[in-house]
Image 1: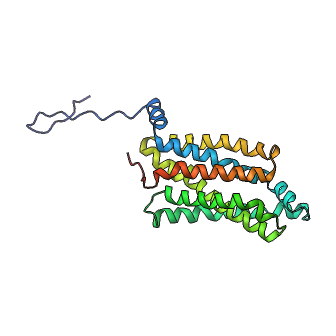
Image 2: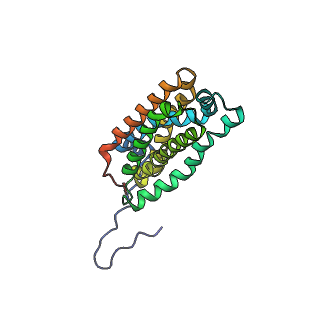
Image 3: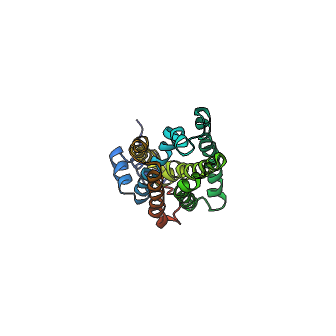
Length: 221
């Protein structure tokens, strides 16, 4: 093949393109990335509450509202899922427009809302009101899915940079999946009141570990 062209009269030879990082190098960088590790820890702490409500929602409703039938106990937790549809769209807009594409502030605020509602679940639902149960589950779903969408999605992508976005997202979601396993198991071993206070503590801890990154912006390289 022909030799690469040089600039006329200069004798300069173009430098070779920099080789892309290897998979090992990308993983090494991800495991040393404090923000990725923080998101992973937060997602691990957040995921049990989500899957406990998804998998055990009707059981929890039946326990707190023993007078409702099976069909109603199955339909009431739908409020949790409906809020989960609205929350990511809302918090994404808030992150972009109100916080200049910073992901941590709306995430921490969502975790704060979630902590309060999880801690208030037992006393609020002790009234036996179906409407109260629907409202509490909806607010819990909003706070949980808002934080979930940011942590496992755009915040993970932002933190991984151009070369490691997919790897960072996969790592964060993998850690969350460990928490999801616990979410499916814990309701079978713990009383509902203890369970929700534990979930509230976990959400609060997730917010605390993310708080030092309040002003962090996306990694672009």
